[in-house]
Structures are given as structure tokens and as C-alpha cells.
Image 1 (cartoon, helix red, strand yellow):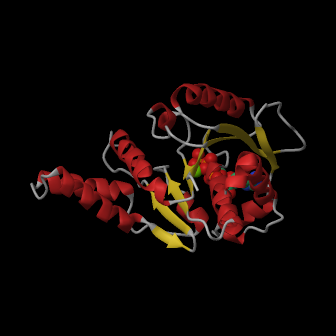
Image 2 (tube, rainbow, N blue to C red):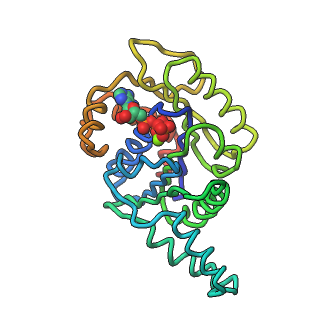
Image 3 (cartoon, rainbow, N blue to C red):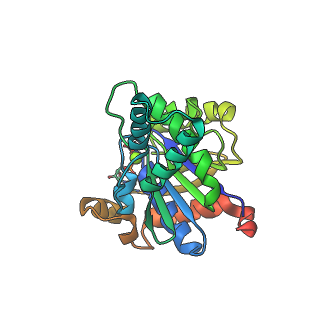
Length: 252
Ligand SMILES: Nc1ncnc2c1ncn2[C@@H]1O[C@H](COP(=O)(O)OP(=O)(O)OP(=O)(O)O)[C@@H](O)[C@H]1O
Ligand SMILES: [Mg+2]
């Protein structure tokens, strides 16, 4: 099966991480024989807690380690660099059943973000092929789309709340993504909507209300695996996933 890559993007605080985690759980439950790579591409970190895992090492740790080795003159040949990089990357992957988890990490020095983003892009492109599904929890806003970190993906999931601002950010990201991202399908999840507001969007995947269970889960510091299967967030994520995979599901 060809790898299917999902990327979550949108305004800050709208539920990208919670929904990425829910997608990862649902994929893992629905396709127990498939391999899933979960990527926390947000330097602000969050997906690890949502999945109840802790990365031993991050992509930024590896990048720094390699940069230091080069500075000290410990490595010179490109081949050596490549094998070293692959070797260290294995240390970054934490596994739970059929889910492998990888995090970008938090670059300490100012101005480091573009370097680690460039490295992240390479890492994703290098290892994605080993998995059936890749789910990327992106950072808020447009930066990773602009920098083409998320260049080759299958499904772009735009998450928003019901606010005018959230919907505007969604349309801005969509516009930029149309130019810079090669992707098969785009869809919008409107999350934490009060009442029965349903925005008119051609590619609406799901509308999710305020989920008390998700709130409680979060306050207790519990992972997405403790979320009941009848909770609005779980059900909304399931519906969105089914809509995205749609006919493609035959190939899964
Ligand atoms: N449908 C929902 N009902 C209630 N709470 C929710 C819902 N969706 C998300 N939350 C809560 O909202 C908060 C923000 O969600 P989350 O961290 O997933 O957003 P985010 O878009 O990833 O934020 P950031 O931009 O900071 O990365 C979390 O406390 C989460 O538990
Ligand atoms: Mg987040």
C-alpha cells in the first residue's frame, strides 16, 4: 500500500493536536496490521502528551549532535553523515503498538527554526515510505506551509473554531497551500462549535461541539486513548477520517 500522509494545520489553539491524536488512535484501531508514524512537527510540543508518550530524543537533538560532530571534524564524508543521521533518527522513535512517534523538538537558539524545519522535511521524506500512514501535527499558522515543510502530502486537514478569525486563517492557509502543497484532498474540521452552527464550506469534514470528556481528559493529563468512543471529538475525527479516505479506503 502507498503511504498516506495527513497534515493538520490551522490557527493556534483550535484543536489540531487533539484531532491529530484522535486520527492516530482511530487509524491504529481500525488498521491494527498497518504501521502508523505520528509526527509532532510543532516546536511548542503537545502531541506526545496527547498520545501519552515521551520522546527520548528529538529531531532537533539529532541535528545538533550531527552539527557538533562536523564542527569537531569527527565526520567528513557525506556517506558517513547520512548513515550517522539515520542511526540517530532511530533513537528518536518511540513505539506503542503499531504507532511510532517522532518529535521535532524545541530549538534553543534563536533563528534555528528554519534549519530544523528543513531537516524535519528531509526526515519525513526519508522515513515516510516505511509506514502505511503518517499523521503530522503541524505548528499553528502558515510558516510550515510557506517553508514547504509540508510539501508532499495526501490529505491536508484545516482545523478551525467557528470564529470569523479562525475561518479567515483557514482560507489564507488554503490559498497558500493550493500554490505550495501537492496534495490530493483538503478538508476542514470546525471544532469546539457552540450550538448548531454549521459553516458553508465545500470540503467540510466534520463539525465538533464542545466536548466535556475531552476537557476532563485533558485536565487529568490523560491521553487520547482514554477518550470514550462516543465522545464528540472521537466521533467527529472518525467521520472526518472516513470522508477523507472515502473511495481510497478500497486500497487500504
Ligand atoms: N472539541 C473540544 N471540546 C473541548 N475541548 C477541546 C476540544 N478540542 C480541543 N479541546 C481542548 O482545547 C485545547 C487546545 O486544543 P489543542 O492543543 O488540540 O489545540 P492546538 O490547535 O493543537 O493548539 P496549538 O496551536 O497551541 O498547538 C486543549 O486543552 C484541548 O483539550
Ligand atoms: Mg498543538
